[in-house]
Image 1 (cartoon, rainbow, N blue to C red):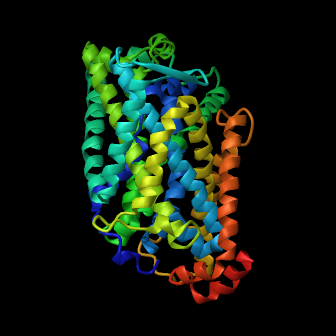
Image 2: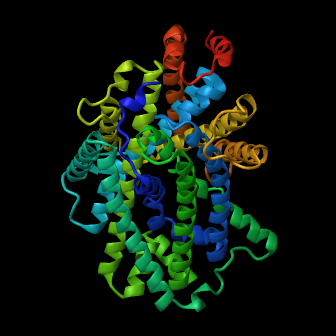
Image 3: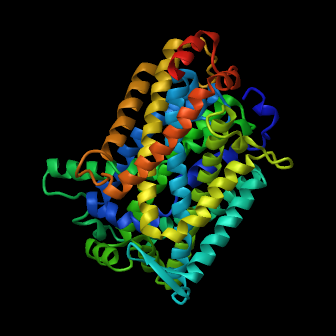
Length: 486
């Protein structure tokens, strides 16, 4: 991996990485879930819940910021955990995040044609079959396949090309969001907030409702971690990378909070309830009311469609780099470490995820919801291990150059480990609203079993792994590394 800087092109600037992270966070959820957030916690309560969730993610982001600036190499989490925890911990960390990225990419491949079906009622043609109650049509599959091929092709052409697409789409999302927020300020009514500022009839009850929003918000803020995956392709001072990562988290929280207030200021409680039980697209209905135009509702949905594409694009970048990093250290077949001879991108890793996203719509939307939920657990496990790596490296390598140095490292790292561990626990404990179903456990178990097969292969190739990561592990770590692999 020591030579990767000469192989991967440094072509991403400050703006590129900001829109890559922010675009990953702002997906489709703000269009379809705003009403549910308000019903859970009230307008003010939902906003407070998102701020609390943002604080949880910010602690994790601080750990990422320092580590990315210190080790700006492709694979992000893989590099951090390898240096701190050795091959075993690193494989678990990276394998977990790959599941999370693939889950999002595959789900977006399904979500995009579903949005077109809403925009164009006659879109669905050629019924084929049903999976878990979801009807699959030929036209729906064709659009899913075509969009998968296009996004994959864009990524093969280079991170800069993917970032250019991301910029256009993110600006469209921002424009639509600003239009809704401005319209709510001009045409909203404070009377709509009456009775729906906070959910619950007592302070204790209101706090409980706020926490019900807070526990789900971190899963709408994942995406900042795409930056360290592509760190080797970023042509920005290392210290600035950490700052941009944290800025993207703040921007994501602010966007969601403003959308919540805009919807609540435009629609009363009864209207939101009706919209949730009707179209389910509460934010689009708020846009229609603000402008008294059904066309503007569709404009907002197009903005949401752009959000699907930005998340899809970012997580394809992140997932392919994570797979590339595993292959570079001989933890996956070396074929996935091949770079495109012209564009310098990890072409086989991109094609692998692109192929999966092309095949995913065949199994229907419900299956992909299960995959994405299982992947969210993987992301939380990864966050916890990266935060632990932050603490370990502060103790084991206090003299390591850290261009972006976090203050009060012990407190920040401990909070990041505890909060990310708490996020993971939400998927394990009953009645949290995030508990994995039996189907999701089967998917997570199958992914774990597949990972175990690759890990056992790694153990047999311990010499190759040690040679590949020699530039990442200081000499003092070699003895421990050998022990972990035996």
